[in-house]
Amino acid sequence: MSGIAGEIAYNRTADLAAVVTMTEQLAPRGPDGQGVWSHDAIALGHRRLALIDPSAAAAQPMHHVDHGLSIVLDGSIYNHHELRDELAAKGHRFTSTGDTEVIARGWLEWGEAVFERLQGIFACAIAERDTGALTLVRDRVGVKPLYWAEVDGALRFASSLPALVRAGGVDTSIDTEALHSYMTFHAVVPSPRTILAGVRRISPATILRIEADGRRSERSYWAPSFARDPQHADWSETDWQDATLDALRTAVQRNLVADVPVGSLLSGGLDSSLIVGLLAEAGHTDLKTFSIGFEAAGGEEGDEFTYSDIIAEHYGTDHQQIRVDSARMLPALTDAIGAMSEPMVSHDAIAFFLLSQEVSRHVKVVQSGQGADEMFAGYHWYPPLAEVADGDVDGALATYRKAFFDRGHDELAELLAPEWMAGTDVSGDFARAHFAAAGADTATDRALRLDTTVMAVDDPVKRVDNMTMAWGLEGRMPFLDHELVQLAASCPPGLKTAHGGKGVLKEAARKVIPAAVIDRPKGYFPVPALKHLQGEYLDMVGDALHSRAATGRGLFRTEAVERLLAAPNEKLTVLRGNQLWQIGLLELWLQQHVDAAGGAGR
Image (cartoon, rainbow, N blue to C red; front, side):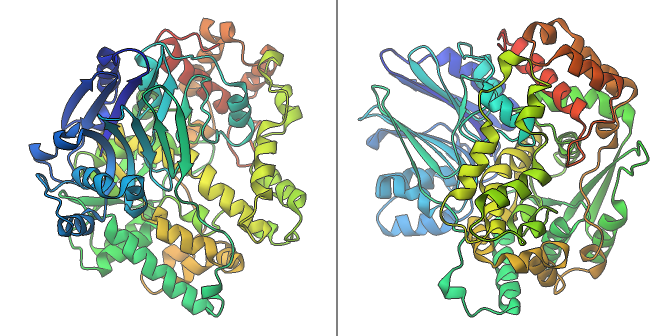
């Protein structure tokens, strides 16, 4: 819905100029309006994407002078109508029909407990005049981002990491533990760390409160349980299929809440096709759908239009096929990296960036199928975990690492320069602690929990938000509705891993969409040119790694870089990612977001 930024200073007035700089940096997230405000030690900034109550009455920052409350919101609250009615019955009066005012009034009525009542995607900041405190919060599954940094006796926050860097004063040195995660844990850097030592990310379902004197307190207000629910003990496979379909129907309807038209991305896979099918089932006609394809490279096809066309024709959608040739993709690649809050090595990023550019010409909100693979065990590494004994944490972790990690600690030491190597196996230790925690019944449950609460948030979910919001387009993901997430978490893993993965979802989908897209081989957003580096793409990576900035930074061993450049397509990760692209993308991102802003990146 927007971009938000702000500062709370501890022994001085807020730096309004810094907040203005951050707010301007967030302009693509909110092309419909802007606002900044300051009072003593607190300043807030907002860029508006007008989706709910587009009138001036819902402009932000929003203030309730009588109660000394100011608020900025990024996101959309799907149950704002119901909460408004409940609050009105308690005597609250509203001056807008927007969701931001509902949060503010809910805060006055329930305090922090208001966030537990919200259904939707949101990052929010609330400033209190009387206490001088600032509260930051992020939605349950982390769809909306929120970063913060300590700068010159103050805490600053923003919807993107580059916005914080642009305002100055941020420690832009590389966080070696985050670097270890990026290079081993398939480019995932778990919250609260980011690749920069001076910037932290608020974790999903987390409330961070900063007092006037700088004291901070933090608490989580929700977490899914991956243990079996006794209330579902007698459910049959059909019961689980019906419950899954009902929960997804509800989620799809919730994600339609807006005062503007809502479209749908349609890759041609099970997940996006099912969303379109449920929208059609509910009577939504003239639905706008969008798919994208790229030129083939290295013998690999670059589109899945065959399957997306089946769904578009079956439901008579207003469908747009977007074909991207190499001549268009190369210039867009720099812009896509510019839209990344953090380095995103997945090829999907450029696909989503270009797709979002086209979609934003037609709608302001779009639904997508992200999250289903993590919720319903769609990846290939889940079935082997069923062979691991429930209590064997080390065995479960070894199975997971073999299928998901890009490289081990010792192999990383052969690539990174010694001064950039973390002293311990950071990502391995993180995954082990996650697997050993209570609340997950089986090895498969442990992997699903890690992927749902960490990997999904800091890879595909972040990618969708960044690339859609780069064009003033809000990407919504019904599969990440928190009630559906909890239902999927409690589902017996064998039902999810059946039929090659997503078994319970596939069987439920047969009641809605054509079998041809259910029984097809698993696909993805293919961008062959970034997997099979050659020509101008290879030159771009080579120039970045040979640049003065890269050699001065010295992240990688020279001989290791030269080996990768000499055989650019031979070294792939276990998930078939190009290892050269992984290090090249990191350098390209640092040069665009850190070096260009005056940071040293060291």
